[in-house]
Amino acid sequence: GQQLNQSPQSMFIQEGEDVSMNCTSSSIFNTWLWYKQDPGEGPVLLIALYKAGELTSNGRLTAQFGITRKDSFLNISASIPSDVGIYFCAGLYGGSQGNLIFGKGTKLSVKP
Amino acid sequence: DAGITQSPRYKITETGRQVTLMCHQTWSHSYMFWYRQDLGHGLRLIYYSAAADITDKGEVPDGYVVSRSKTENFPLTLESATRSQTSVYFCASSTGGPSYEQYFGPGTRLTVT
Image (cartoon, rainbow over the protein chains, first blue to last red):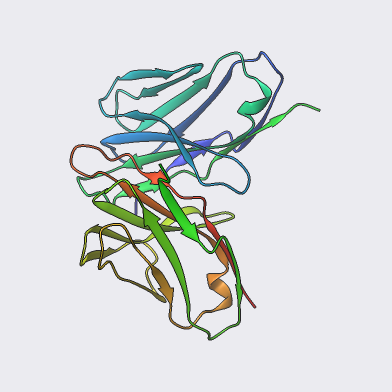
């Protein structure tokens, strides 16, 4: 079946640093979604991407739909403490609403 | 605007019991989904529904039953709970059509003892 490889699995951030994470697959996707999940809460949609090559921003967050349609990237600029949490990518293959699969997440923590 | 709500937020039940998790959305979204979230597996789709009385299986449907008699409600029933169904369950909804954006509820943490 379809699989998404999300990396890194975890990372530590210091306030002010830029952060990058990505999702890759051997399969082609039609839509990429990026979510953030805080402890004890549901995932919150951050950015939606619908076209190959598309670059979309939401405040300090920027995401890109890879040209090959097999990957997507999320960047966070000038990180702040509230950026801590787990970030998930999700890719939709085919045309069915039921074909959305999720990466296993990138956990952002604050550097001790 | 309440959005999407789930109840209960926490539930402990015994093996073999039937338990129903509720999901309610106020957006009039056509599509609703049930996912389970487990360490090491991420979010996996259990069932989804395109409209009232239309449901489809997802990746992990065994042991679960859904119904959708009203657009705004999408209950998930575990007919005979097993320990392997201990998980966090999330309901989501989407407008459908050209948008594939799914919006999630706060989750229900279910423990089967």
